Image (tube, rainbow, N blue to C red):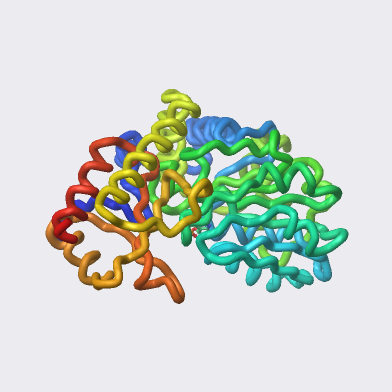
Length: 363
Ligand SMILES: *Cc1c(COP(=O)(O)O)cnc(C)c1O
């Protein structure tokens, strides 16, 4: 099989941190090896740090970010619960589908793609929802939603936040913002291969949890024993075989991020995103996401009318080994998505993607 080296600027996997890649090459440990259990415990601790939470129940679920979404709803939503979902992109729409499959009475509150969620409209949608769900960083549109504003006014409702494209990239403060349940993925700003879903649930949500969710694999009642003491329960029991290599890789990446400093990492993403967005404007390109609500780690660009989106993406890939993303649905060929996540949030990566775009677009 040919091995090709790509610069992944897409919304999917970003280039992993070198520390995360190196950890994948270490000898495998058994999933009950004391050294692995130590790594798992420390991974849960490190996840608490990057989520900004003291929640005992914080762990990496086995599965990609969508498994985190599924786990959040299946463990928190009882049939008939009113669930308000704020949706301004693909991942908000996915939440609506997942909540519906859990038997919720879903109240979708939709906003035009490229614009942010408006907290007042979300609150006005229902007087007493059991749960309000929102995507912090909408990867499909490049928009940042104000989770803290929802947390401040959620009332008795639980607040569920998708932090897949924010954790390890922009500020996330689960406890300070009043988030009851949050999940993430590894392949965005955490700079690890796809495969795990960092997850956290607070006491209020735990007290209202579903005792026998439809999913056995994602049943948090059973997963307490899997992570053992780290999740506030004593003793460890076999639930499923931990993906040991992925956990080791996540552990290494989180170690690097925490050592660099969460504020420093966020500033690095902010600066890289600003430089990319300024550079795109200099090339005469229009940004898709509303000004003032743009993510630094995922930039959306309106494809110029005289340009074929697929041809440009193919040329970037073939000539420069650079992958950027198209969009989805009605925007599939009308918007590009350029990620600067984790290891890619650097000035040299910005220069590379801007230089390639300038040549390909002849600007
Ligand atoms: C990528 C992503 C997901 C889904 O994660 P997968 O790893 O693809 O399952 C969910 N929400 C957001 C905001 C994402 O960017």
